[in-house]
Amino acid sequence: MPEGSQEAMNSTLARLLRAITEVDSSTIEECCTSEVKLHVPGARDVDLTRRSQGSEALTVWAQTVHDLCGMTQFAMDRYFENGCETMSVGMIDIERLPRRFSSPCAVHVRFEGSRIASFQLLLDTYALERFRGGMD
Image (tube, rainbow, N blue to C red; front, top):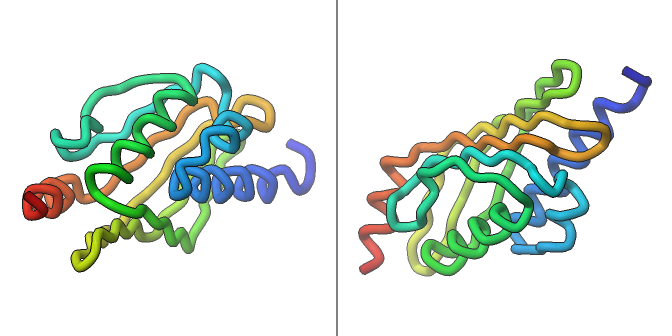
């Protein structure tokens, strides 16, 4: 693997997380392969429990979380690289005033070339379910 490519992968992951926060479909498409495999478990209300694929599905998920739960923010503080894979750990915050959901999270991605081909998000799905249920 060429020197500096780990930094580029970390930068692409950070860029993707910002695009998810902003529900920016064009940046999501730039960062991911067209058939990116997704695994984002979560609350039944926001339909995050199924495996899916495609950058459009990732955009739909980001929009659904935004619409049903609130503004999403990622604060990743550690990156662990292993060849074409990167694991990032930190916090996810979802704010819908006056409430805020906060959970430790991990994001695991696998790259093909310079684009993300697999995206997995792990977080406290039980707490997210309670947070979402408390809004109604």
